[in-house]
Length: 424
Ligand SMILES: Cc1ncc(COP(=O)(O)O)c(C=O)c1O
Image 1 (tube, rainbow, N blue to C red):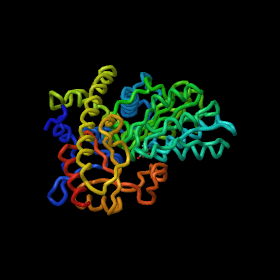
Image 2: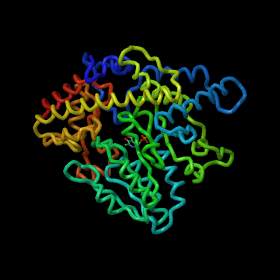
Image 3: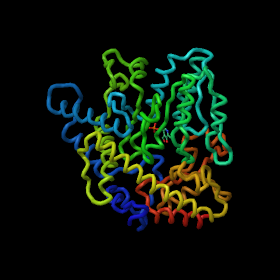
Image 4: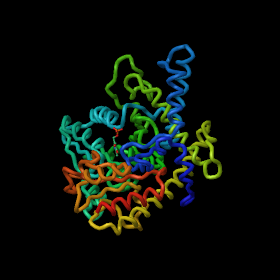
């Protein structure tokens, strides 16, 4: 059925997992913030790589050369996804956390005792603790951007009051994986630049929902993770070329000093990286699916891909906004449920459809268990957004998190709202 110009049935048909049933009922996947489902085309690309072209890189034989070509293509495809014209500034690794821990060690070599850095209380701990640990080792002071208690969004006045010429780095998330709030990263980056601080943006939660453009943002670093945007478990780090070239990461002697290999330690997850490119090609293919029901875009050129992704993400944004409005309208009449994050419908464009909530009758764990029994998959806990759950006084139980993606239907939203109403 087409809702808000989006043929969700067609989209869903590309994801085999979405046909899963439990006790004769379809499963509703609202666990996307912890990892999205994967289209058939991604699984096919991974399996094709392993079965046909599996090899290490840089040798003369055919499979090695095919591997080189596939992996180079993946850097280009991800560069288009992130909005940089320079594929050598896209690095792959195990996951966002591992890449950020490694990057923090490298970047912190430039810090001196008495310097300062700024992290936020709305971030996943992956963009907080790596910097806090590096700061501890370097004798650097850490400031935490506090939250506004009305909707738990970042207090930008507090950020500005903590920013100074001593600030060496601002690490902030693009969108919260707990509350769904989109942070004003453009404003934060501009302010940080004005005092000469570097910026490290965690776009893990933002990436499946909205278009990223590192060139427009002018961030120094941006990290994301493909398993959140319909791909395999692979981490991605973009860095500004000049910084990637001048900063010295910890790496082995025989490994290259050229970009991007300098920042990619050890043998990479080739099949996973091929799958990352396939996930982006899947997203690109949705540009065609408004009028055609097949994937026409597997061989898009870079500029076509960029234009298609622009259009696709604009439509995903509209559809997901409609999902958010439906959810917020539905839960507004469920008694005893408290939502953490933006609930004002006039501000709905400043959030993605990820909702954290608590109830006055049941713990988040009890709610998630009851939902799971009914085939509705959601998460309970702190979601590793520990600075937020601590600041909001929600430890140790955290919140119930219901996270929608572009493959969730309006009927699924109604179903989860009905389940919550019945439970409460
Ligand atoms: C916002 C956010 N940042 C960082 C991470 C960590 O990513 P990874 O699992 O790739 O280490 C997650 C994972 O849930 C996340 O949601």
